[in-house]
Length: 69
Image: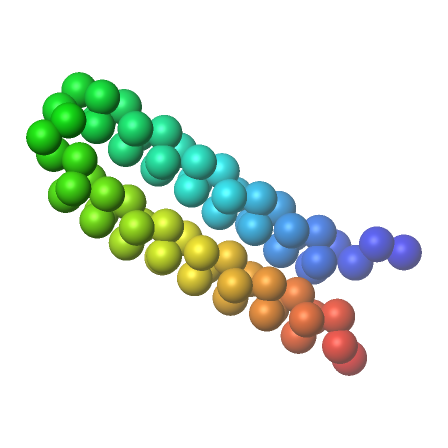
């Protein structure tokens, strides 16, 4: 039987991935509008991706804690 806790954590990880995609898409749009701001935007993008990936790894660790009983 499928454990709903694992399914919900998987959906949360999918949400983090979608958020990362939205972030990168918006940075690309902003860089297209103002190319001179690319270096500042790139720094903000790396910072945002780091926080989103941190959330992903916390959720991944939670799946291992939920599966072990």
